[in-house]
Image (cartoon, rainbow, N blue to C red; front, side, top):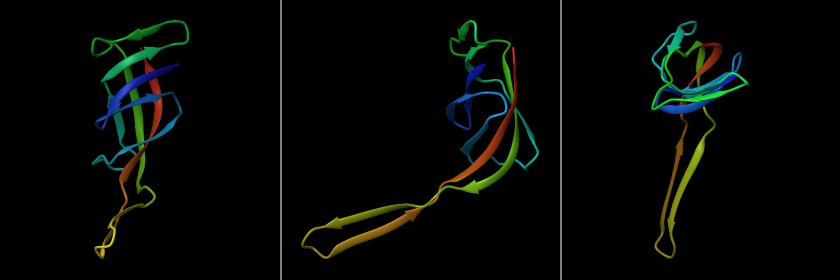
Length: 103
């Protein structure tokens, strides 16, 4: 069983008891998320695809915590000009455990 959901601006394939990282949500750890934006659903026998959403399917998740990804380094350089720029970036995320998918 799996579902394709739109959560925090991203489309994710989720399964029950799976842990996913989504862009930062302004929620406290322990909060239950009810995701109604299900784009596709499969129970192992048949697949239902929405136009654009599948009716009657909900995904429940629980916020486990927040964190930051590994650092990504950006480097610019122009040859023979003495121009060098180095910049780092760490993306914030929210870790969500998918509790159940109900149809």
